[in-house]
Amino acid sequence: MANAADIKQPFSGRLVMVGFGCVGQGLLPLLLRHVDLQPAQILIVTADDQGLAVAREFGARWVESRLTAGNFRQVLAPHLNRGDFLLNLSVDVSSTALIGLCAERGALYLDTCIEPWAGGYIDTTTAPSVRTNYALREAALAIRRPGPTAVLTHGANPGLVSHFVKQALLDIARETGLPTATPTHRVEWARLAQRLGVRTIHVAERDTQFAPTRKALHEFVNTWSVDAFVSEGCQPAELGWGSHERHFPPDGARHAAGSRAAIYLLRPGASTRVRSWTPQAGAQHGFLITHGESVSIAHYLTLGDDPAAPEYRPTVHYAYHPCDDAVLSLHELAARNWRLQDAKRVIKDEIAAGLDELGVLLMGHARGAYWYGSRLSIEQARAAVAHNSATSLQVTAAVMAGVVWAMRHPAQGIVEPEDLPFEEILALCRPYLGDMIGVYTDWTPLAGRAWLFDEDVDRSDPWQFKNFRVD
Image (cartoon, rainbow, N blue to C red; front, side, top):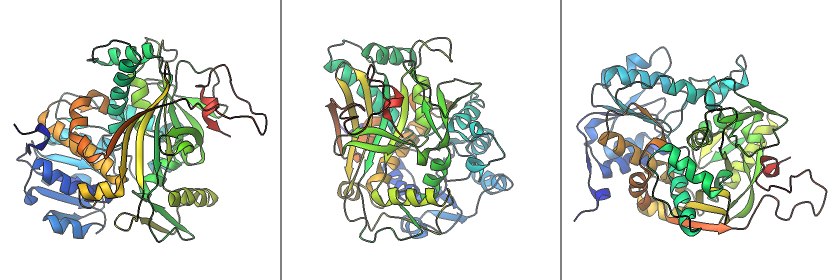
């Protein structure tokens, strides 16, 4: 009997891909493997000719057009009708605008990040709260209506990591002797996290990939989109704010409306570091880059009727150590007062070695801390799917799984990663994630602290955010 993951998903409509950077290029061969598509059904709409050779290799059609608020309908509407699919893999193209167009045309939709129009992340005429992912998420959820499925933020993170969290909760329950059936809805998942004592969740990532040609002066180097990374790095740092927290950050701010599941800091995420841990690296300093999952996971795992003072909610945030050249690039970016370098380079085909270790670190339970996720090397990625690095394949596998799920469930309206069946998504992704591992550790952010100088820490509770933050 054939494995369900090996059966191609039928699809008779058109697939319109907006944006064709490293994720789009890596996704195209994966979609053709898992969806019954002919190249003539695929249209790529992109602002430049980046990736044109890859599109031609697979026979996809190509339109070069930079989408704006003034032209996106004119460019896209002729190619979108009922039963078609729009994949938004772009930067600086409004997600809510594209979702609205898809709803009108009866087309399916998926993105990997909720994007504003160009300049929205750094528009200093608006308050910092308006430039947050919290605000973008609230605006997207506000247009929820019955209609064609629109999957928000389903890449690696946000996206795949939400499914990692659910699997990790079940692993901890099993291994700490807490008998539990797999939860079937949000409140049951939140109650399980509460019963286990999970207080803090990091999306803890370490990228060790490198190319022989190292970063040059005035150059930004990364293993995925430079523009997207810089955009999110310049947004205010954001984190889901846990019910156990008792030290509000001096530079923190709360939102006045909405779920109240997250707070933000009055500083860029690319200048905010936190202590975290991954199995290979061990203890590390990561950047608290804002990501949608920090808000959506925290909201999903909230219990209680008062959003400002919930019965239970974990603190959730990203703790990202990008590749070494990207770290150097961020330091230079900060010195330039957050103005992007003159040159930028995404390394993929020239990567010589390294891996991307992407997972979730759940802390505060009976076993201390548990990291669950994907350890994927560049060699494994290249052997699995053409035109991918370790970083891009963790994203493209999750996009593919979200696309297949949406095609199977075409009338769900707007949904988030937490709304999708985690076992089905992980089954589709697992062949592309390298080594899936779960590791317990006795590490805490207080381990080995204050031996050299006194530090202002809360020793009564290692899982307070002030203990994670690097001054």
